[in-house]
View (cartoon, rainbow, N blue to C red):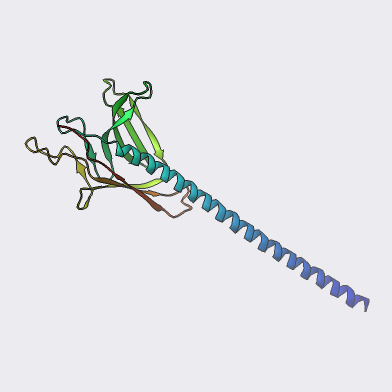
Length: 201
């Protein structure tokens, strides 16, 4: 009888150990899945916030675009993957004073670059900086009042007719983002900035 009781106790210990290992495995799996989901969500949130911040910067700057048909240096040249224009900016060194800058956006690898050159300064001060990382694609489109176009060139008019030398009514920016390790699926963020036609003769 004693041997039977000891045998049953040994089986119970084995079953209890198996159940304990199983429960610990389940808890670990749930914890791992929860941590993984949190990390993915955090990565996606950071990408979204950085992308939105980048689009907001670009949208505000493009709104200050300025051209003049009588001055060939004041241009707005947009392609599908690049945009170059002249904008009005505050002179940081001199409060209350403004200057014209030539701004260009383009993609280099997965870095979205912003190139700025001071327009009025004879030495052409400025620089190039990264405004967003992990950008797989960059697209611009330009609204003429009837349709969206892939290109816009304010210098495309003729000297005899400068009526078509103007800014687009709106610019749409679309960026495709993905984290560096490729854990998340790429996603697209976009923004539209409206432009008032500014310029002189």
